[in-house]
Length: 377
Image (cartoon, rainbow, N blue to C red; front, side, top):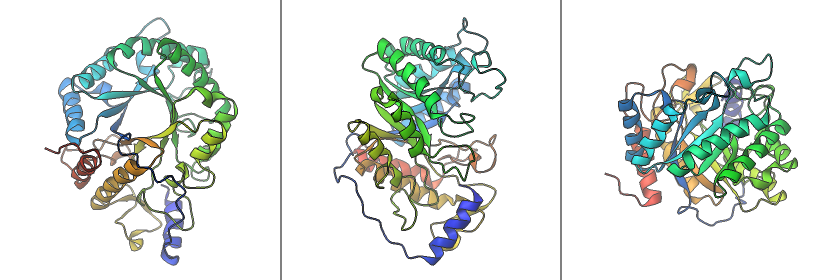
């Protein structure tokens, strides 16, 4: 959340009463079908064996049954189309499988040799959707027999950080070619449209609002073969359950607004598929001030939350997801703070950088146990 947005929210919340908007969702509970997981980004492949074991053991201790991790094309084929380097991700799959954890790979990012000429960023789209689809097909051939059944196609393709000059039609071509390649190899695979960032263009010039992006992708026909939409409904400093009286939260945009991800899917004949919240979390550090759950804590520089408020947000989102009929999965980002990152990006963990637990660790664990019935040891 930018400082400008925080300032606007602070001003309005301090001057307007809280009033819940009508909930347009079906009241059906989704507790038995909501998957819970941890989102690790591209960190697992670079860990030592002890570090990897500790990270996955921690996921088990939290009660989750899924992990989400980058299977980056840049890592697998960094030097050219004829060479493959699967070993780092092999380790992740083997370690996860030995613990009974399901892996959700994100097929994403483009090695230099496969990018558009002149595009130097790791997040540049591939010059050829067919080449990316070939990579995806080889990944499925390698891991489908090892229990990997679900695939997410790219990370935040509507955000300029992860797709320079986001282009829904170009992404749709990539998605469609990749879904076809995956399903040809493994017809029972679950394929997700890549996790959409809950962004407003005014916050990130050039980025595309997630509902606009989904509408544009579906308009090409590319939603016809997907099995779900991945989405990153960050709401901090507000809880997922908060119904703002004057603005639509990222959580509400899933299905509680008149124009929503759900309504777009319904309009394109995809009423049967759901939304996978493949990232959700809240940072406990940053360059500005911290929100603690009160209006008074919101200032023009608010960009993170206190550790105690992060714990509340963790409990709230697990409960909200388990009761939401459209949410098929909830992945918390992240497991541990990353001191190599900048600003608030370094502080999303349930653990601090030194490995000690924040209050949110126990809160998330207890919430997962309460909604799944799993025993907390």
